[in-house]
Structures are given as C-alpha cells and as structure tokens.
Amino acid sequence: MKRIFLIMLLVATVFTVQAQKVWTLDECINYALEHNLDLRKTQLAREQADYQWKMSKNAWLPTLSANAGEYLGFGQSPSYTGVYVSDNSSSASFGANLSLPLFQGLNLYNTAKADALNLQATDQDQKAAQLNLKLNVMAFYMQVLYGKEQVEIARRQTELSAEQLEKTQQLFESGRIAEADVYESQAQLASDQANLTQAETDLALSLLNLTQALEIEDDEAFEVSTPEAFFANEEQEIGTPQATIAQALLNQPVMEAARLRLQKSQYDLKASKSAWYPSLDFYAGYSNGLYHYFGDNYPNTPIDEQLKRNNRAQLGFSLNIPIFNGMKTKYRVKMTELSITDQQLDLENTEKTLRKEIRQAYGNAKAAQQKMAAMENSLEASRVAYEYAKAGYDMGKKTLLELNESKIRYHKAESDLLQARYEYLYRCKIIEYYRNAE
Image (cartoon, rainbow, N blue to C red; front, side, top):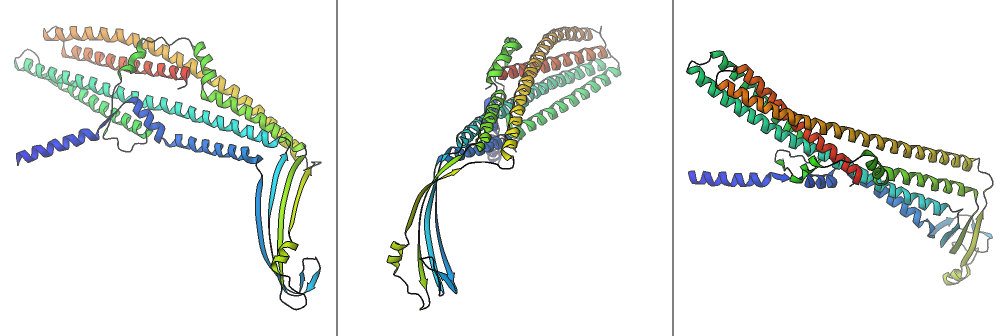
C-alpha cells in the first residue's frame, strides 16, 4: 500500500511539474502578440482598410449585369412593333449590360491612392499597438521578477528573525538577557512573517496582471524565468535624448502613421476636386424579348423568329458635365482642406508628444540610475552596520531593539536597491524601444 502511495505521489508530482510551464520574456511577448484582444481588433481594422483599398483599386474594372423578366398583360397589350393590341398577353425579356469608366476626373486614381495610404497607416497603427503591448508585457514581467526577489528578501529576513528568536530564548534561559527581549524577538518575527505574506500576495497579484495581459485564465500554473541578458543594460550607456529623438521621428510607427494620414488627406482633396470635371463612361448592352397573346385578335410569331426579330445590341458613350449641384462639391472640398489642416496638427502634436515622452524617459532613466548608485552605497553601509550591530548584540554591547532597527534598515536598503534596479532596467528598455521601434 505504501508503495502504491509513493507511485501515485510521484505521478502527481510529474504532472504538476509538466503543468507549470516556465515562461521566458520572449515567450510572453509572442503569446500576447498572438492572443491579445486589443491587438486582434487592430488586425480587424487593418483587414477592413485592405478590403477598402482593393475596392478602390478595382473600381477601374467594368461592371457587367444580366436581367430577365416575365410580365402578364390584360386588355391592351404591347407588341413587338410598339403598337398596343386588344389581347391579353405575356411577355418575357432578358439582356445584359456592361459599363466601363473611362474618365472620372481622376477620382478613381486619387481615391485608390488615398485608400492605399490609409492601409499603410493602419499597418503602422498595428506596429504601434504591438510596441505598446510589448512594453506593457515587459513591465508586468519585470514586476513579477521584482516580486519574486522581494519574496526571497522577506523570506531571508524571516529566517534571520527566527534564528534571532531562538538565540534570544537561549540567552534568556541562561539569564543573560531579560524576558522583554524574547517578546521583542517574537514581535519582530511576526512583523517579518507579515511582510513575507504581503510580498507573496504582491507577487500573486503581479502574476495575475501578467496572465491577464497575455489573455491566460489559469495563473496558478504560471511561472516565469529570469533571463540573464535582461540585466545587461545595467552597465549600458543610454546615450543622449537628441540622438534618440532623431531616430524616433524617423522610425516610430506613430510618426509614420501620422505622415501617411496627412498624405492620404491630400489625395482625398484631389478626389473631392475631381467632381468639378466631366466624366466619361462606355456602355454596351444586349436585349431580347418574347411575346405571346392568349386571344385570337393578334397572331403569335414562332419563338425562333421572335428571337431573331427582337434581338437588339447597343454600344455608346456617356458624357456627364457637372454644372451646378447645390455647392456640394465646393463645401466638400472645403471640408477636406480642413481635414488636411487637422492631420497637419495631428502630425505636429504626435511629434511634440514623442519628444516629450523621450525626454521624460531619459530623465526617469537618469534618476533611476542615480538612485540605484545611491542605494548600492546605502545597502553596503546598512549591511556593515547590521553586521556590527549583530556582533555587538552577541557580545552584549547592543540591545535587541538596536539590532532590530539595524536589520530593518538593512532590509529596506535591499528593497530600495532592488526597486531602483528594476526601474532603471525598465527605463532603459523604453529608450531602446524608442530608438529601434521593434
């Protein structure tokens, strides 16, 4: 029975390990790019723009239609000669028509160009959405890594407090310290255990945020790995904001999308102005018909003879010269000109916002870098102070309260350095994305 239990426990452990997949940052980003709902909506917008462009591009093609009809007439009925006769009748007609646009004031050309530029703009929108998603996933991923290290720090502090409590009890039992010190150690252990619980809760919330960004419902079997190359940016020079701004203005998808939409509005204006020009279309048609009379007042002609006699084909051109349409074209042109101005303002605003964001990113990165350097010095000083306090307490020269205060400062220095480190890495990643737009 014991052997069976061990086998079942081993199998359960294997399945648990298999179920808990360890995700890398690249895997998280790739999964999010494939499953994120907001990103899928941008893909739908891109497909709609693609179909719109295809419709505009194919507007040059001829239109072909067929028609057929069956009619019953009572009393006076038409004949193939055009004369009405006094008979009930039935008639059938069928035909086909072809229309080909020859000249539409360059409307078709300009509309197709505008829709092609709009398609390119939606491509850039999708790239921008992918870039934002990558940054969000990376931020959530780093928060998880930060949470894991916070849990480890809190666990180490709890273990130290547990060891300190055991040592304090031994000292109390030997009569070297007062009982109050035991209660002080117990209180510190309880505080550290509460901090550990809070750190574990924060880590669970960070994992939840990450899985929600990935559109994963089951976060219980979710674990992430720490890529070694992820921390390479700690010693990396971030450069100057001017160089990054110059690259971002050329490479960022939001800038390219704004430029493309400005070009699109200019072709929209040309398409609107085309309504002032004449349009020329080519037409071709074929028609035929059959007549049948139910009375004796008019003889019925055989079907084959009717088909030969009623056969009719036509070719022609249609010229439409606009003269006055209630000022619609004029106001449509004015509205399009306003749209161009609006797109120019959007482009300027996008550039202004991008410059501001990059400068803020550099300011945040510099501040995080300075904070990280300061926290490294603070951690080293706190560590040394804690070692001295611990040694002093062991020799009876320091009180337990002084030791706990020193440990708390050491713990806070560890947490502050960890937070500054991740903040700096994240700021460097933001600058890298601005520079490369990938």
